[in-house]
Image (cartoon, rainbow, N blue to C red; front, side, top):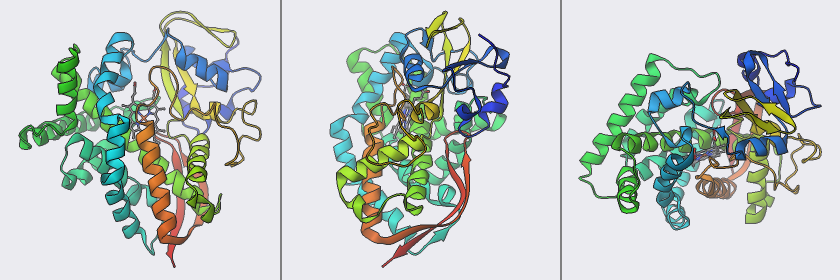
Length: 383
Ligand code: HEM
């Protein structure tokens, strides 16, 4: 395969980096022996392939957090997933929908009444996701701000190329310390995520050490907060750009379709990084053993062979092949919780505001860590 003259580091700094690659193939050999996968079917095949692995000794997230769900494969990965299943079950999500989510959502909507802000992402978007995940972890909500400050830089550990500094290691240590201390302070009332996952480990006889359990709790925290903060920013941005009539969003089915279309166009995780455990054939091309593989979720979601006029916002289109939550063994276990949260948020927003308007828009995306629009002003008008 010919090498596409693109340095992976510079390429991935571009939002929607798949647009900079030739459209006549789905697998691209970049400089430095890195491979990029861009088409919908090829991305799905790569993410679902048993020899395309998540674990790699050079991954900064594995180094910083220790062994964890995102960086494991095979039986160890299955064991991690089994630990998380109880806190993300349909019954638990129903419980969160009754009290936890409405409380956090109403508080946010109260804060937003009459506000015009050019900093929605930093000031408001994190409040609901952090509130939910802190509660699941059994963390005092008073610590939410500290958690937010410590966690945001850690998201860069999941980037390619990764950003790993003394700060990220110090933050990881402090977060793990707070999680432990909070659990001790609750005298093991059994409600925290650590208690739940330790119970699940012991009941199911899963063979994972205490430190693996703690890294899983931390990874769960990052995965559940920063993705959703980025996405809530995209959601509000799309509502404010009047991509869809506010009145029509009163219908729950339309609301869900709206969320799905925003997820297709603005997936917070634009790229999932993998490694070839052996020579692997994807879309007729061989990816050699030990290559890094950058799979473009954003590219898969805007593949014109699957989504006609892919850049158009069309709530009524079919989205069966949209994959904002990835595919294969590592696909997001928090998707149902996330969607429940977003639907309730829209319902509260349309109940409270007569209008949301983007009053200034530089049309820029931040593609680092979790992707979302930046440099815009949005106004929340009450009747
Ligand atoms: C808009 C919201 C969200 C999006 C778009 C999203 C997307 C994703 C994606 C694409 C992955 C796969 C990453 C990879 O394979 O490299 C993932 C993994 C994960 N997500 Fe989410 N996520 C969201 C919200 C959540 C929430 C709310 C939780 C939990 C409360 C969560 C927990 C996780 C966990 C634990 C993993 C690791 C799974 C594994 O490696 O097996 N996510 N998410």
